[in-house]
Length: 45
Image 1 (tube, rainbow, N blue to C red):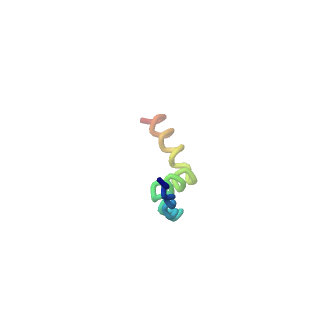
Image 2 (image 1 turned 30 degrees about the vertical axis):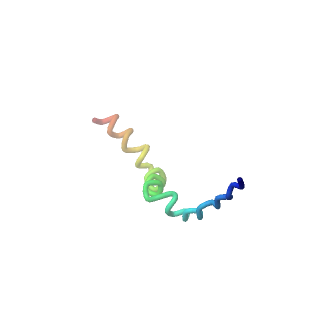
Image 3 (image 1 turned 90 degrees about the vertical axis):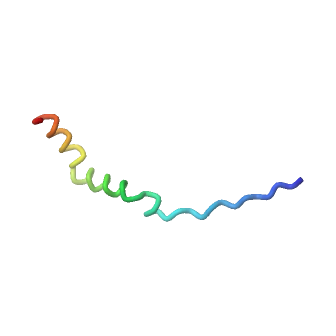
C-alpha cells in the first residue's frame, strides 16, 4: 500500500502571525512603559 504525500499548508502572512499583541508589546517596550510604570507603581503605591 502506497502512502500519499501530504502537502504543507500555505504559510501565514507575517502580520497575521505576529498579531496585534506583539506590535503593542513592541511599542510599549520601545516607549519604556512596560519597565517604567510597574516600577513607579511599586515604588509610590
